[in-house]
Amino acid sequence: MRGAPEDAAQFLFHIRGPAGVGKSTLARRLEGMAREERAVTAYVDEAATDAVEAMEAISAQFAQQGAALKGFDKLLATYRQRRHEADAGAAALSAEPGADPASDRTPGAVRDGGGPAPSPSPSSMVASQIGLVGLGMIPGVGAFTGAVDPGHLAAGADRVKALLSARLRNHDDVQLVLSPLQSLVPVFLTELAEVARRHPWLVLFFDTYERSGPQLDTWLRDILVSDRYGEMPANVLVVLAGQPRLATRTWEDWLDLVTDWPLEVFTDAEARQLLTAKGVTDERVVDVILTLSERLPVLVSTLAEARPAGVSDIGDPSGTAVERFLKWETDSVRRAAALSCALPQELDEDVYRAAVDAEASELFAWLRALPFVTDHAGHCRYHDVVRNAMLRLQRQQSPARWQQQHTRLADAFRDRRTQVEEGTPPPEGWWGDDRWRAARLQETYHRLCADPRAALPGALRELLDAYAHGGGTVRRWIQTLSRAGRDSGAPAIDSWGRRLLAAVEEETHTAMGVLTVLLANGGLDPQGRSLAHTLRGRDHRNAVRYDEAVEDYSQAIALVPDAERARYGRGWTLSL
Image (cartoon, rainbow, N blue to C red; front, side):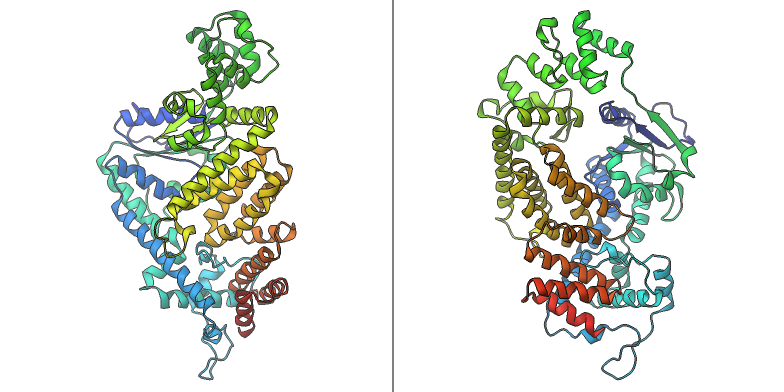
């Protein structure tokens, strides 16, 4: 940031390159430099699954630096509360046997008074045709997708608006639930501008953008280069760090505003320079390190930190770089701890102690300082290149210990989850508690790694609960299932992960394709299949696809004859 002109035209920087070249390291160093120049910064990674969560993460980090976005935080809290009220209202309506389906008819249906239901409003007709009715943002209410008649589509929109209007307090609350970005982003930008007036720079970092980009691209483009939501302050810089180039379909008209920052593996001279700086000068040792690391910066740095005295310390160079690093670590306790701590996806001190043996329980500070470990606010992650190699090594060396360690970690996260359950559950149940979901997600991951065949049916059934909670939640569960398939070397789980990721990343506002994949591939028991058909029937009904809805509800009842929710849903649909 030093020396940047006040009217700098370049405000979007893209660090890109293959895994292991140092993108995250560079982004973190840039953040440190920005802080030194009195900039307010925020660091967002793939944990943010949509634009709302990204803004929430930015706001929380700004608040830690004395730059709270109070107006945005207040509106976000209102959004969470109103969305819960809408969910609860919709659930209550579906659950009440005495509810009157006729009170929510489409145009042409006859109301109790004998006259036809009113036609949809002109405003909702327009909104439906141009896709502005964002009903997919409401968990439990599928988006309107597919080729449907605009009049029917608008009628469905009006019905949902009427339901929300009856449940919520005013028109603004209805709009907040239906179109959260339209309500939240302008306030976010206004608050950002207020902070920008008091500080020289605001710098927003988006790491692992290859994972979060598909969910954030359109929102980020809109706030940076359009006035759709308002104006971005001129002293805001954005740094993206990811593997591929930016998506052409989103950024093609704006690439001239992007400062492209490609990173590559070290040249031979660069790698040797780093090794010399670390005191590794024996030419034979240097040659082996260059061979093992393939000049990938993260591995060159890792191997250099071990400071081998001579080629005899290396032994057979055919093994992986990680094996060589661990061989050079002469302390067997530390060596075992480094391996064990590759198993969790993320560590805090409690997870560290659950992962390692008792004699290593006080070495967390040592682990945090390793060159391939990223430490942010007490939460540590291994670099993917190093972690993947360590996982392969352990899985191959001792399958029995692999299963034992993952089971131990799964039990630790189960205990963390049950501790949360000792408190008062939120109104929407434990799926509404962030701490509970986080523990449940990691428990599921480690069960899948420990025993893929035994854990897969339960994990697939759990996806239905995640689906019911919302798009961000089901996306996290699918990503975790996919990661468990790769990490455990389990082809069945990996295959499921690929199919589900493809379904959830389709260009629609609904994750209904996830239900179709689950139903088409035989991974659910009859109870689970019945629930999947019921959920899909509900989404078809909300999308005014009544024939498909009735078919799904009927299949749900055929599988579980006393499926009360499916019976009620079919009856309601037939009355429309």
